[in-house]
Amino acid sequence: WDSVLAVTYPARNAFGIKRGDSWDAVYTKSQGKCLALHVPILTKEGAAANSDETKKQDESVEEVYRRIYCLSKEGQEQVRKNELGVKRFSSEGKACLERYRICSSRIFSLVVETLLQQVGKHNFVLERASIDELFIDVTSYCWQSESFDGDVDEVMTKTIAVGKGQQPKQTYENDDDEDDPKIKQTLERGCFVAHIIRKAVFDKLGFTLSAGISTSKLVSKLGASYGKPNGQALILPSAIPQVMAETEIRKVRNLGGKIGKQVQALLPPDQTTMGSIARLLSLPFLCEKLGNETGKMVYDACRGMDEEPVKETAGALVKSITAFKSFQKISITSGELTEWIALLATEVVSRVQLDSTRNNRYPKSCTVQYTCSKEQQSGRSTRSVRISFPRDGDVKTKLVQSARGAVYAKEGNVFLYRIGLCAVDFQVKMANGGISSFFSKDNSPIAAKPIFQESAVESTAVNRMVDSEAQYQHDEEVARKLQSQYEANSKTVNIQKVQDERSDTIAPSSSSADEEIARKLQSQFDRENYVISMAEKRSATKAKKPVTSKKQRIDNFFRKM
Image (cartoon, rainbow, N blue to C red; front, side, top):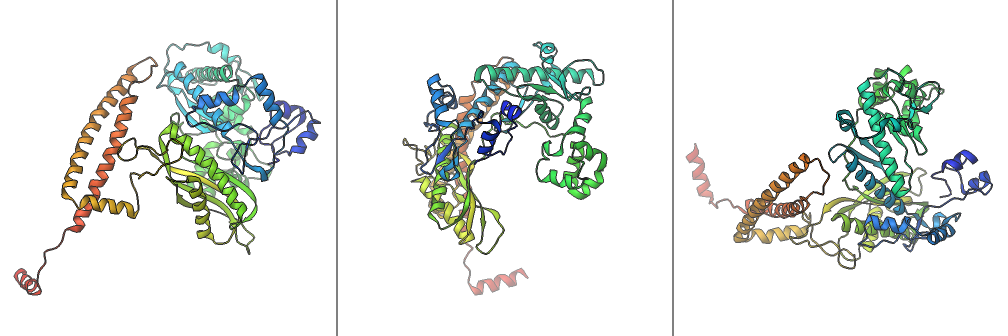
C-alpha cells in the first residue's frame, strides 16, 4: 500500500521513478505526467473495488481472460476513468491478484502451444518459476536437429551479445572462435526458439517478453536482465567470467536473500560482485562458514556453474491456494480480525471452487499462518497451525471459526499483525464410489466422505463391515475385479502412450478417455483395498486365544519340560 511495485521503462528512464516510491513521490517526480494504477482490491464485503473480478464457475481461463483484457474502446475508457490515478488504502480491503493470475495462465498456455508447434511434444522441458517467469530447456532439440527450420542468422542480428568488447550490451556478431562451434550453434538455435515464443505472445496477446539464453538457469536469468525491455540476450560460455565479475551478488538467483547477506558479510564492504567471491573466498572457507552444500553452491555460482535441471511443470497444478492480509496491531478477540479472516476465507473458498471445477480436486487441509506478539513482549514471531478444510455446509463460516479458534487455542490472547489462509493437501475427487461431487449446483461444497478419514466415523464404518464375513468376501471379490479392469485399461493407456511417442505429428491424444477410466478404477480399487486391509487388521484383533483353566496351564507347563 502506497508503495510502487512495478515501474514502466518510460517512467523509470524519463522521471527516475523506482520501486518503493510512494504515491505522492510518483506525482512529484513526474510533475503529474505519470499516473499510478492500483492493484485491484477486495473489500471487506468480498467485492472487487476497482475491477470486475467476479468469475462464473463454468468459465474457462480463456473466457475470463477475454472478459478482463479484450475490451472495447468504450470499456477501456471506462477502466481508465475508474482505476487510473485512484488511490486505495489498506483499511479498504486486501490486494487481489486474480487478474494477473489469469493473464499469467493465458501467457503460459500460449508458450506451451507455441513450443508444441515449433519443437514438438517431447523436445522441451518447461518450468514455471513464478507468476511471470519460466525456464525452458530445448538443449536436445537444438543440439541434435540436423536440419533446423528457421532463419537463425536473421534472429541473431536482433540478439544482444553480453560480455563482448567494452560494451555490456551490443548486437550479436559471430566474430570469435573462443567457443566450441557446436555449443555456439546450439545456443543460437535456442535464441531462435526464444524469438518465436516472444513473437507469438506479442502478436496474439500484446505482451512483451524478455529472454536470456545460456548454458544454465543461473546465467540465463542474468541474460534476461540484459534483454530488457522487449529483447533477448545471449551469454556464451566465453563471456560468463566477465558477466559474473560485473554482476552484483544480490541480483543472482538464490543469493538475493539470507544466503546472499551471509556471503556479503564474508567480504570487504566494497566488494559486492560475484567476481569478488571467486577472487577472495576459497571453497574450504565457504564450506566452513556456510556448510558444505551451501558453500559448494556459492563457489559454483560465482563461476557461472549451475547444475540444477529445468523441472517439468507444464502440466502441474499449484500445490496451494493462499490469501494473506497485513494490518496494524489487532487483538485476536476483536471483531475487526474476524472481518479480515472472513475476507481471506471468501477469496480462498472462491478460488478453491474454481480450482475444483477445472481440476477435479479439493483441499484436505488449511494452514493458518500468522505473525503475533504477546502484550508484554516487544518482539514478533511468525507461526502456523494446521486445520481441516471444511467440506460441507457453510464452508466460509466454518473456515473462519476454525482458523480463529485454532490460533486462539494455540496462542491465547495475543495481538496479530498478519494472517493468512493456505489451502493445501489437494486430493482428486472421485466420480463414483460414494463421492459424486464436492460441489452442488449452487457451487457450495456438499457433504462427502473422503477416501481416508482419520476419525471415529471411519472406525465405526469399518467395524460394521468386518462384522460380517460375507461382506468381507464380497469386498475382496470386488477389489479383484476392479484391479483386473484397471490393469486392462492401463495396458490400453500404455499402448497409446507408445504410439504418441513414435508419432512425429502433434495430434490430440485419444488416450485421455482411457486415462480417465483408469484413474477412476484406481480410485475405486484403492478404496476397496483400504477397506480389505482394515478388515484384516480388525479380524486379527478379534482372534481370541483358547480359554484354558489354571490346572490345564500347569499340566501343559510340565509336559513341555
